[in-house]
Length: 449
Ligand code: NDP
Ligand code: 2IT
Image (cartoon, protein in one colour):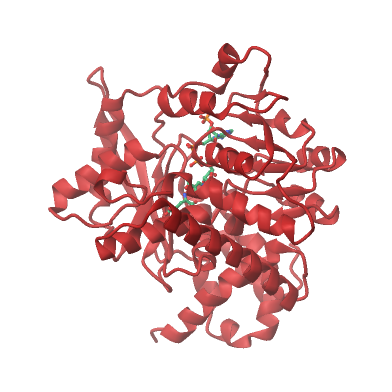
Protein backbone atom coordinates (compact mmCIF):
# COMPACT_ATOMS: atom_id res chain seq x y z
CA UNK A 1 0.00 0.00 0.00
CA UNK A 2 1.41 3.38 -1.00
CA UNK A 3 -0.66 5.64 1.27
CA UNK A 4 1.04 8.00 3.71
CA UNK A 5 -2.32 8.77 5.26
CA UNK A 6 -3.52 5.99 7.63
CA UNK A 7 -7.21 6.82 7.19
CA UNK A 8 -7.03 6.50 3.38
CA UNK A 9 -5.04 3.26 3.72
CA UNK A 10 -7.84 1.87 5.88
CA UNK A 11 -10.55 2.91 3.40
CA UNK A 12 -8.60 1.17 0.63
CA UNK A 13 -8.23 -2.01 2.69
CA UNK A 14 -11.96 -2.09 3.34
CA UNK A 15 -12.72 -1.66 -0.36
CA UNK A 16 -10.48 -4.61 -1.24
CA UNK A 17 -12.00 -6.78 1.50
CA UNK A 18 -15.60 -5.89 0.64
CA UNK A 19 -15.17 -6.26 -3.12
CA UNK A 20 -12.95 -9.31 -3.57
CA UNK A 21 -11.72 -10.25 -7.06
CA UNK A 22 -12.67 -6.88 -8.58
CA UNK A 23 -9.23 -5.53 -9.60
CA UNK A 24 -10.55 -2.80 -11.95
CA UNK A 25 -12.67 -1.34 -9.14
CA UNK A 26 -9.71 -1.44 -6.72
CA UNK A 27 -7.52 0.28 -9.33
CA UNK A 28 -10.02 3.11 -9.90
CA UNK A 29 -10.55 3.71 -6.17
CA UNK A 30 -6.83 3.62 -5.39
CA UNK A 31 -6.05 6.29 -7.98
CA UNK A 32 -8.64 8.65 -6.51
CA UNK A 33 -7.70 8.00 -2.88
CA UNK A 34 -4.02 8.67 -3.64
CA UNK A 35 -5.00 12.05 -5.09
CA UNK A 36 -7.03 12.92 -2.00
CA UNK A 37 -4.14 12.88 0.48
CA UNK A 38 -3.74 16.70 0.51
CA UNK A 39 -7.53 17.11 0.70
CA UNK A 40 -8.09 15.04 3.84
CA UNK A 41 -5.29 16.93 5.57
CA UNK A 42 -7.02 20.23 4.80
CA UNK A 43 -10.61 19.03 5.41
CA UNK A 44 -10.85 16.95 8.60
CA UNK A 45 -14.65 17.44 8.51
CA UNK A 46 -14.84 15.10 5.50
CA UNK A 47 -13.03 12.41 7.50
CA UNK A 48 -15.16 12.95 10.61
CA UNK A 49 -18.40 12.58 8.64
CA UNK A 50 -17.18 9.54 6.73
CA UNK A 51 -17.62 11.18 3.34
CA UNK A 52 -14.96 9.05 1.65
CA UNK A 53 -16.05 5.84 3.41
CA UNK A 54 -19.51 6.49 1.96
CA UNK A 55 -18.28 7.50 -1.50
CA UNK A 56 -16.55 4.17 -2.15
CA UNK A 57 -19.76 2.23 -1.45
CA UNK A 58 -22.45 2.44 -4.17
CA UNK A 59 -25.81 3.73 -2.99
CA UNK A 60 -27.50 0.80 -4.73
CA UNK A 61 -26.46 -2.20 -6.86
CA UNK A 62 -29.04 -3.89 -9.06
CA UNK A 63 -28.24 -7.27 -10.53
CA UNK A 64 -30.76 -9.11 -12.69
CA UNK A 65 -31.43 -11.99 -15.08
CA UNK A 66 -31.92 -11.13 -18.77
CA UNK A 67 -33.52 -14.05 -20.65
CA UNK A 68 -34.08 -13.77 -24.41
CA UNK A 69 -34.66 -16.07 -27.38
CA UNK A 70 -32.09 -16.25 -30.20
CA UNK A 71 -32.86 -16.64 -33.92
CA UNK A 72 -32.69 -20.45 -33.68
CA UNK A 73 -35.35 -20.45 -30.95
CA UNK A 74 -32.88 -21.24 -28.13
CA UNK A 75 -33.31 -19.51 -24.78
CA UNK A 76 -30.25 -17.46 -23.80
CA UNK A 77 -29.57 -15.98 -20.36
CA UNK A 78 -27.36 -12.97 -19.68
CA UNK A 79 -26.66 -10.89 -16.60
CA UNK A 80 -27.82 -7.29 -16.26
CA UNK A 81 -26.32 -4.70 -13.92
CA UNK A 82 -27.03 -1.14 -12.83
CA UNK A 83 -24.85 0.43 -10.16
CA UNK A 84 -26.39 3.64 -8.77
CA UNK A 85 -23.24 5.01 -7.25
CA UNK A 86 -23.87 8.53 -6.01
CA UNK A 87 -26.83 10.92 -6.27
CA UNK A 88 -25.47 13.80 -4.15
CA UNK A 89 -25.45 16.33 -7.00
CA UNK A 90 -28.15 15.02 -9.35
CA UNK A 91 -29.91 11.94 -10.75
CA UNK A 92 -27.64 8.96 -11.43
CA UNK A 93 -26.18 9.31 -14.92
CA UNK A 94 -23.90 7.05 -16.91
CA UNK A 95 -23.77 4.61 -19.77
CA UNK A 96 -24.66 0.98 -20.35
CA UNK A 97 -21.94 -1.36 -21.61
CA UNK A 98 -22.74 -4.58 -23.51
CA UNK A 99 -19.57 -6.65 -23.72
CA UNK A 100 -18.73 -10.24 -22.70
CA UNK A 101 -16.13 -8.97 -20.20
CA UNK A 102 -18.78 -7.15 -18.12
CA UNK A 103 -19.12 -8.25 -14.49
CA UNK A 104 -19.78 -6.38 -11.22
CA UNK A 105 -16.17 -5.13 -10.91
CA UNK A 106 -16.21 -3.45 -14.34
CA UNK A 107 -19.53 -1.71 -13.70
CA UNK A 108 -18.41 -0.56 -10.23
CA UNK A 109 -15.15 0.88 -11.58
CA UNK A 110 -17.02 2.73 -14.32
CA UNK A 111 -19.74 3.93 -11.92
CA UNK A 112 -17.16 5.19 -9.43
CA UNK A 113 -15.27 7.12 -12.12
CA UNK A 114 -18.53 8.53 -13.42
CA UNK A 115 -19.28 10.26 -10.09
CA UNK A 116 -16.18 12.48 -10.35
CA UNK A 117 -16.40 12.93 -14.12
CA UNK A 118 -19.99 14.08 -13.95
CA UNK A 119 -19.14 16.50 -11.17
CA UNK A 120 -16.34 17.96 -13.33
CA UNK A 121 -18.83 18.83 -16.10
CA UNK A 122 -20.34 21.44 -13.77
CA UNK A 123 -23.82 20.08 -14.57
CA UNK A 124 -26.26 18.56 -12.04
CA UNK A 125 -25.70 14.83 -12.64
CA UNK A 126 -24.87 12.05 -10.17
CA UNK A 127 -22.94 8.93 -11.12
CA UNK A 128 -24.05 5.47 -12.23
CA UNK A 129 -23.23 2.77 -14.76
CA UNK A 130 -24.77 -0.42 -16.03
CA UNK A 131 -24.61 -3.07 -18.65
CA UNK A 132 -24.54 -6.73 -19.45
CA UNK A 133 -22.21 -9.56 -20.46
CA UNK A 134 -24.30 -9.80 -23.67
CA UNK A 135 -22.10 -9.70 -26.79
CA UNK A 136 -23.80 -7.78 -29.63
CA UNK A 137 -21.10 -8.91 -32.10
CA UNK A 138 -22.44 -11.28 -34.75
CA UNK A 139 -26.03 -10.98 -33.49
CA UNK A 140 -28.87 -10.11 -35.87
CA UNK A 141 -30.82 -6.87 -35.40
CA UNK A 142 -33.77 -8.99 -34.21
CA UNK A 143 -31.63 -10.67 -31.55
CA UNK A 144 -30.25 -7.34 -30.37
CA UNK A 145 -33.81 -6.01 -30.22
CA UNK A 146 -35.12 -8.94 -28.19
CA UNK A 147 -32.19 -8.67 -25.80
CA UNK A 148 -32.66 -4.90 -25.34
CA UNK A 149 -36.39 -5.36 -24.71
CA UNK A 150 -35.76 -8.01 -22.06
CA UNK A 151 -33.02 -5.90 -20.45
CA UNK A 152 -35.32 -2.87 -20.26
CA UNK A 153 -38.25 -4.92 -18.94
CA UNK A 154 -36.34 -5.20 -15.65
CA UNK A 155 -34.30 -1.97 -15.77
CA UNK A 156 -37.37 0.26 -16.25
CA UNK A 157 -38.48 -0.15 -12.65
CA UNK A 158 -35.20 1.31 -11.37
CA UNK A 159 -34.72 4.34 -13.67
CA UNK A 160 -36.54 7.54 -14.61
CA UNK A 161 -35.88 11.01 -16.04
CA UNK A 162 -35.41 12.43 -12.50
CA UNK A 163 -33.95 9.26 -10.94
CA UNK A 164 -31.42 7.58 -13.19
CA UNK A 165 -30.74 8.30 -16.87
CA UNK A 166 -28.65 5.67 -18.73
CA UNK A 167 -26.92 6.18 -22.09
CA UNK A 168 -24.49 4.30 -24.36
CA UNK A 169 -20.99 2.93 -23.82
CA UNK A 170 -19.11 0.02 -25.45
CA UNK A 171 -21.55 -2.06 -27.51
CA UNK A 172 -24.44 0.36 -26.94
CA UNK A 173 -25.09 2.97 -29.63
CA UNK A 174 -28.07 4.50 -31.39
CA UNK A 175 -29.61 1.16 -32.40
CA UNK A 176 -29.62 -0.25 -28.85
CA UNK A 177 -30.81 3.03 -27.26
CA UNK A 178 -33.70 3.07 -29.76
CA UNK A 179 -34.85 -0.46 -28.87
CA UNK A 180 -34.54 0.25 -25.14
CA UNK A 181 -36.37 3.57 -25.40
CA UNK A 182 -39.21 1.91 -27.35
CA UNK A 183 -39.60 -0.74 -24.65
CA UNK A 184 -39.50 1.81 -21.80
CA UNK A 185 -42.23 3.88 -23.48
CA UNK A 186 -44.34 0.80 -24.11
CA UNK A 187 -44.12 -0.39 -20.50
CA UNK A 188 -44.49 2.97 -18.75
CA UNK A 189 -46.75 4.91 -21.12
CA UNK A 190 -44.60 8.01 -20.73
CA UNK A 191 -42.44 10.01 -23.11
CA UNK A 192 -39.58 11.37 -21.02
CA UNK A 193 -35.85 11.87 -21.33
CA UNK A 194 -35.11 8.61 -19.50
CA UNK A 195 -32.22 7.71 -21.83
CA UNK A 196 -29.72 9.92 -23.65
CA UNK A 197 -28.06 9.29 -26.96
CA UNK A 198 -31.55 9.03 -28.46
CA UNK A 199 -32.20 9.40 -32.19
CA UNK A 200 -32.73 12.95 -33.44
CA UNK A 201 -36.34 12.19 -34.45
CA UNK A 202 -37.45 11.31 -30.91
CA UNK A 203 -35.68 13.66 -28.50
CA UNK A 204 -31.97 13.14 -29.10
CA UNK A 205 -29.54 16.05 -29.04
CA UNK A 206 -27.43 17.23 -31.92
CA UNK A 207 -23.70 16.65 -31.21
CA UNK A 208 -24.32 13.77 -28.73
CA UNK A 209 -22.97 11.24 -31.27
CA UNK A 210 -19.81 13.29 -31.80
CA UNK A 211 -19.52 14.63 -28.24
CA UNK A 212 -17.03 12.32 -26.53
CA UNK A 213 -14.52 12.40 -29.39
CA UNK A 214 -14.96 16.11 -30.08
CA UNK A 215 -14.79 16.93 -26.35
CA UNK A 216 -11.62 14.86 -26.02
CA UNK A 217 -9.95 16.95 -28.72
CA UNK A 218 -11.22 20.25 -27.25
CA UNK A 219 -9.74 19.28 -23.87
CA UNK A 220 -6.47 18.09 -25.43
CA UNK A 221 -6.12 21.23 -27.56
CA UNK A 222 -6.61 23.42 -24.46
CA UNK A 223 -4.07 21.39 -22.47
CA UNK A 224 -1.57 21.56 -25.35
CA UNK A 225 -2.12 25.28 -26.05
CA UNK A 226 -1.20 26.07 -22.43
CA UNK A 227 2.14 24.35 -23.14
CA UNK A 228 2.66 26.03 -26.51
CA UNK A 229 1.61 22.97 -28.58
CA UNK A 230 -1.42 22.11 -30.70
CA UNK A 231 -3.03 19.57 -33.01
CA UNK A 232 -2.03 21.67 -36.01
CA UNK A 233 0.59 19.79 -38.02
CA UNK A 234 0.77 16.93 -35.48
CA UNK A 235 0.64 13.18 -36.09
CA UNK A 236 -1.95 11.33 -34.02
CA UNK A 237 -2.47 7.67 -33.11
CA UNK A 238 -5.93 6.69 -31.86
CA UNK A 239 -6.90 3.24 -30.56
CA UNK A 240 -10.35 1.77 -31.11
CA UNK A 241 -12.63 2.48 -34.05
CA UNK A 242 -15.94 2.86 -32.27
CA UNK A 243 -17.96 5.94 -31.39
CA UNK A 244 -15.26 7.76 -29.42
CA UNK A 245 -12.36 6.94 -31.76
CA UNK A 246 -14.25 7.91 -34.94
CA UNK A 247 -15.27 11.36 -33.71
CA UNK A 248 -11.90 12.03 -32.07
CA UNK A 249 -10.41 11.34 -35.50
CA UNK A 250 -12.88 13.71 -37.17
CA UNK A 251 -12.11 16.58 -34.77
CA UNK A 252 -8.34 15.96 -34.84
CA UNK A 253 -8.47 16.42 -38.63
CA UNK A 254 -10.60 19.56 -38.25
CA UNK A 255 -7.95 20.96 -35.89
CA UNK A 256 -5.22 20.38 -38.48
CA UNK A 257 -3.71 17.05 -37.41
CA UNK A 258 -3.13 13.81 -39.32
CA UNK A 259 -4.43 10.54 -37.81
CA UNK A 260 -2.31 7.59 -38.96
CA UNK A 261 -3.67 4.60 -37.01
CA UNK A 262 -6.90 3.12 -35.63
CA UNK A 263 -7.65 -0.33 -34.17
CA UNK A 264 -10.24 -2.81 -32.97
CA UNK A 265 -9.85 -5.75 -30.62
CA UNK A 266 -8.39 -7.89 -33.46
CA UNK A 267 -5.66 -5.56 -34.76
CA UNK A 268 -4.70 -2.13 -36.04
CA UNK A 269 -4.36 -0.30 -39.35
CA UNK A 270 -1.52 2.09 -40.20
CA UNK A 271 -1.98 4.55 -43.04
CA UNK A 272 0.98 6.96 -43.12
CA UNK A 273 -0.86 9.18 -45.61
CA UNK A 274 -3.65 9.66 -43.08
CA UNK A 275 -6.64 7.44 -42.27
CA UNK A 276 -9.59 8.04 -44.60
CA UNK A 277 -12.39 8.53 -42.10
CA UNK A 278 -15.28 8.07 -44.56
CA UNK A 279 -14.04 4.53 -45.20
CA UNK A 280 -13.86 3.79 -41.47
CA UNK A 281 -17.38 5.14 -40.92
CA UNK A 282 -18.68 2.93 -43.76
CA UNK A 283 -16.96 -0.18 -42.34
CA UNK A 284 -17.81 0.42 -38.67
CA UNK A 285 -21.05 2.42 -38.55
CA UNK A 286 -22.83 1.01 -41.62
CA UNK A 287 -21.46 -2.50 -42.22
CA UNK A 288 -20.42 -3.31 -38.59
CA UNK A 289 -17.33 -5.13 -39.91
CA UNK A 290 -13.68 -5.42 -38.76
CA UNK A 291 -11.11 -2.63 -39.19
CA UNK A 292 -9.01 -5.00 -41.34
CA UNK A 293 -11.54 -4.37 -44.17
CA UNK A 294 -9.89 -0.93 -44.59
CA UNK A 295 -7.19 -2.59 -46.69
CA UNK A 296 -9.79 -3.61 -49.29
CA UNK A 297 -10.34 0.10 -49.97
CA UNK A 298 -6.80 1.38 -49.37
CA UNK A 299 -4.29 -1.39 -50.22
CA UNK A 300 -1.32 0.87 -49.45
CA UNK A 301 -2.23 0.89 -45.75
CA UNK A 302 -0.90 -1.84 -43.45
CA UNK A 303 -2.73 -4.14 -41.04
CA UNK A 304 -1.17 -5.73 -37.94
CA UNK A 305 -2.76 -8.50 -35.85
CA UNK A 306 -3.18 -7.73 -32.13
CA UNK A 307 -4.12 -4.29 -30.83
CA UNK A 308 -1.26 -3.57 -28.37
CA UNK A 309 1.37 -2.81 -31.05
CA UNK A 310 -0.40 0.39 -32.09
CA UNK A 311 1.56 2.35 -29.44
CA UNK A 312 4.86 1.55 -31.15
CA UNK A 313 3.90 3.83 -34.06
CA UNK A 314 5.73 7.15 -33.96
CA UNK A 315 3.36 10.01 -33.11
CA UNK A 316 3.11 13.40 -31.36
CA UNK A 317 -0.26 12.76 -29.72
CA UNK A 318 -1.81 9.47 -28.53
CA UNK A 319 -5.53 9.13 -27.79
CA UNK A 320 -6.46 5.72 -26.31
CA UNK A 321 -10.19 5.33 -27.14
CA UNK A 322 -10.88 1.57 -26.85
CA UNK A 323 -11.01 0.08 -23.35
CA UNK A 324 -9.53 -0.17 -19.83
CA UNK A 325 -5.85 -1.05 -19.33
CA UNK A 326 -5.11 -1.13 -23.06
CA UNK A 327 -1.94 0.98 -22.69
CA UNK A 328 0.68 -0.48 -20.33
CA UNK A 329 4.12 0.59 -19.07
CA UNK A 330 5.96 -0.83 -22.06
CA UNK A 331 3.61 0.97 -24.47
CA UNK A 332 4.02 4.22 -22.54
CA UNK A 333 7.83 3.91 -22.74
CA UNK A 334 7.59 3.31 -26.49
CA UNK A 335 5.46 6.45 -26.92
CA UNK A 336 7.92 8.54 -24.88
CA UNK A 337 10.91 7.15 -26.79
CA UNK A 338 9.21 8.15 -30.07
CA UNK A 339 8.73 11.75 -28.95
CA UNK A 340 5.01 11.69 -28.11
CA UNK A 341 4.26 14.87 -26.11
CA UNK A 342 0.55 14.50 -25.26
CA UNK A 343 -1.69 11.61 -24.24
CA UNK A 344 -5.38 12.05 -23.47
CA UNK A 345 -7.80 9.29 -22.52
CA UNK A 346 -10.98 8.93 -24.58
CA UNK A 347 -11.64 5.50 -23.07
CA UNK A 348 -12.22 4.98 -19.34
CA UNK A 349 -8.99 4.05 -17.48
CA UNK A 350 -7.15 2.93 -20.64
CA UNK A 351 -3.69 3.56 -19.16
CA UNK A 352 -2.39 1.27 -16.42
CA UNK A 353 -1.08 3.04 -13.26
CA UNK A 354 2.48 2.18 -14.36
CA UNK A 355 1.89 3.81 -17.76
CA UNK A 356 0.53 6.99 -16.12
CA UNK A 357 3.65 7.08 -13.96
CA UNK A 358 5.84 6.94 -17.10
CA UNK A 359 3.95 9.83 -18.71
CA UNK A 360 4.09 12.05 -15.62
CA UNK A 361 7.77 11.34 -14.95
CA UNK A 362 8.69 12.19 -18.54
CA UNK A 363 6.76 15.43 -18.73
CA UNK A 364 4.18 14.14 -21.22
CA UNK A 365 1.01 16.24 -21.08
CA UNK A 366 -1.49 13.74 -19.70
CA UNK A 367 -5.28 14.21 -19.78
CA UNK A 368 -6.97 11.60 -17.56
CA UNK A 369 -10.27 10.04 -18.65
CA UNK A 370 -12.47 11.70 -16.03
CA UNK A 371 -11.56 15.08 -17.43
CA UNK A 372 -10.74 14.33 -21.06
CA UNK A 373 -13.74 12.16 -22.00
CA UNK A 374 -16.38 14.04 -19.98
CA UNK A 375 -17.77 15.66 -23.14
CA UNK A 376 -20.01 12.66 -23.82
CA UNK A 377 -21.83 12.74 -20.53
CA UNK A 378 -21.84 16.56 -20.51
CA UNK A 379 -23.72 16.54 -23.81
CA UNK A 380 -26.02 13.87 -22.39
CA UNK A 381 -26.83 16.35 -19.62
CA UNK A 382 -27.51 18.97 -22.32
CA UNK A 383 -29.86 16.42 -23.94
CA UNK A 384 -31.68 16.04 -20.58
CA UNK A 385 -31.91 19.81 -20.36
CA UNK A 386 -33.46 20.09 -23.85
CA UNK A 387 -35.89 17.24 -23.08
CA UNK A 388 -37.03 19.01 -19.88
CA UNK A 389 -37.63 22.19 -21.86
CA UNK A 390 -39.28 20.21 -24.71
CA UNK A 391 -37.02 22.22 -27.01
CA UNK A 392 -33.87 21.67 -29.02
CA UNK A 393 -30.75 23.65 -29.70
CA UNK A 394 -28.88 23.86 -33.02
CA UNK A 395 -25.67 21.93 -33.69
CA UNK A 396 -23.65 25.13 -33.29
CA UNK A 397 -25.30 25.94 -29.95
CA UNK A 398 -24.64 22.51 -28.44
CA UNK A 399 -21.11 22.37 -29.86
CA UNK A 400 -20.27 25.78 -28.36
CA UNK A 401 -21.58 24.69 -24.94
CA UNK A 402 -19.55 21.45 -25.18
CA UNK A 403 -16.41 23.38 -26.03
CA UNK A 404 -16.88 25.77 -23.10
CA UNK A 405 -17.43 22.86 -20.73
CA UNK A 406 -14.22 21.12 -21.86
CA UNK A 407 -12.18 24.33 -21.53
CA UNK A 408 -13.60 24.83 -18.02
CA UNK A 409 -12.79 21.23 -17.07
CA UNK A 410 -9.19 21.80 -18.14
CA UNK A 411 -8.97 25.08 -16.21
CA UNK A 412 -10.59 23.69 -13.05
CA UNK A 413 -8.38 20.58 -13.08
CA UNK A 414 -5.24 22.66 -13.65
CA UNK A 415 -6.24 25.08 -10.86
CA UNK A 416 -6.98 22.30 -8.34
CA UNK A 417 -3.66 20.60 -9.15
CA UNK A 418 -1.83 23.86 -8.48
CA UNK A 419 -3.82 24.69 -5.32
CA UNK A 420 -3.01 21.30 -3.77
CA UNK A 421 0.69 21.33 -4.65
CA UNK A 422 0.75 19.18 -7.82
CA UNK A 423 0.97 21.73 -10.62
CA UNK A 424 0.72 20.12 -14.08
CA UNK A 425 -0.62 16.83 -12.70
CA UNK A 426 -4.15 16.71 -14.13
CA UNK A 427 -4.81 13.28 -12.60
CA UNK A 428 -4.62 14.78 -9.12
CA UNK A 429 -6.31 17.99 -10.31
CA UNK A 430 -9.31 16.27 -11.93
CA UNK A 431 -9.79 13.91 -9.00
CA UNK A 432 -9.77 16.74 -6.47
CA UNK A 433 -11.91 19.13 -8.53
CA UNK A 434 -14.47 16.36 -9.14
CA UNK A 435 -14.41 15.25 -5.51
CA UNK A 436 -14.96 18.63 -3.85
CA UNK A 437 -18.43 19.35 -5.24
CA UNK A 438 -19.71 15.87 -4.37
CA UNK A 439 -18.12 15.94 -0.90
CA UNK A 440 -19.56 19.37 -0.08
CA UNK A 441 -23.02 18.22 -1.19
CA UNK A 442 -22.87 15.03 0.87
CA UNK A 443 -21.68 17.06 3.85
CA UNK A 444 -24.59 19.49 3.41
CA UNK A 445 -27.10 16.63 3.21
CA UNK A 446 -26.03 15.22 6.58
CA UNK A 447 -26.13 11.61 7.64
CA UNK A 448 -29.00 9.66 9.24
CA UNK A 449 -28.21 8.69 12.86
P1 NDP B 1 -17.76 1.30 -29.12
O1 NDP B 1 -18.45 0.04 -28.78
O2 NDP B 1 -18.38 2.21 -30.10
O3 NDP B 1 -16.28 1.00 -29.61
C1 NDP B 1 -15.38 0.32 -28.80
C2 NDP B 1 -14.07 0.19 -29.53
O4 NDP B 1 -13.09 -0.30 -28.63
C3 NDP B 1 -14.14 -0.82 -30.67
O5 NDP B 1 -13.24 -0.47 -31.67
C4 NDP B 1 -13.72 -2.11 -29.97
O6 NDP B 1 -13.22 -3.11 -30.84
C5 NDP B 1 -12.65 -1.61 -29.04
N1 NDP B 1 -12.57 -2.50 -27.87
C6 NDP B 1 -13.59 -2.80 -27.01
N2 NDP B 1 -13.18 -3.68 -26.08
C7 NDP B 1 -11.91 -3.96 -26.38
C8 NDP B 1 -10.95 -4.80 -25.80
N3 NDP B 1 -11.23 -5.56 -24.72
N4 NDP B 1 -9.70 -4.81 -26.37
C9 NDP B 1 -9.42 -4.05 -27.45
N5 NDP B 1 -10.31 -3.23 -28.05
C10 NDP B 1 -11.52 -3.19 -27.52
O7 NDP B 1 -17.55 2.04 -27.71
P2 NDP B 1 -17.19 3.57 -27.44
O8 NDP B 1 -16.38 4.13 -28.53
O9 NDP B 1 -18.45 4.23 -27.03
O10 NDP B 1 -16.32 3.44 -26.11
C11 NDP B 1 -14.89 3.36 -26.13
C12 NDP B 1 -14.36 3.77 -24.76
O11 NDP B 1 -14.76 5.10 -24.47
C13 NDP B 1 -14.84 2.93 -23.58
O12 NDP B 1 -13.80 2.85 -22.62
C14 NDP B 1 -15.98 3.76 -23.01
O13 NDP B 1 -16.22 3.48 -21.65
C15 NDP B 1 -15.41 5.16 -23.21
N6 NDP B 1 -16.36 6.25 -23.23
C16 NDP B 1 -17.43 6.27 -24.08
C17 NDP B 1 -18.28 7.35 -24.09
C18 NDP B 1 -19.40 7.44 -25.05
O14 NDP B 1 -20.06 8.48 -25.07
N7 NDP B 1 -19.66 6.46 -25.89
C19 NDP B 1 -18.13 8.47 -23.15
C20 NDP B 1 -16.93 8.39 -22.35
C21 NDP B 1 -16.11 7.31 -22.38
P3 NDP B 1 -14.12 -4.39 -31.19
O15 NDP B 1 -15.17 -3.88 -32.14
O16 NDP B 1 -13.19 -5.35 -31.81
O17 NDP B 1 -14.70 -4.87 -29.90
O1 2IT C 1 -18.33 6.85 -19.77
C1 2IT C 1 -19.17 7.72 -20.07
O2 2IT C 1 -19.07 8.87 -19.65
C2 2IT C 1 -20.26 7.35 -20.98
N1 2IT C 1 -20.30 6.22 -21.44
C3 2IT C 1 -21.32 8.34 -21.32
C4 2IT C 1 -22.39 8.38 -20.25
C5 2IT C 1 -23.59 9.23 -20.55
O3 2IT C 1 -24.49 9.22 -19.70
O4 2IT C 1 -23.66 9.90 -21.59
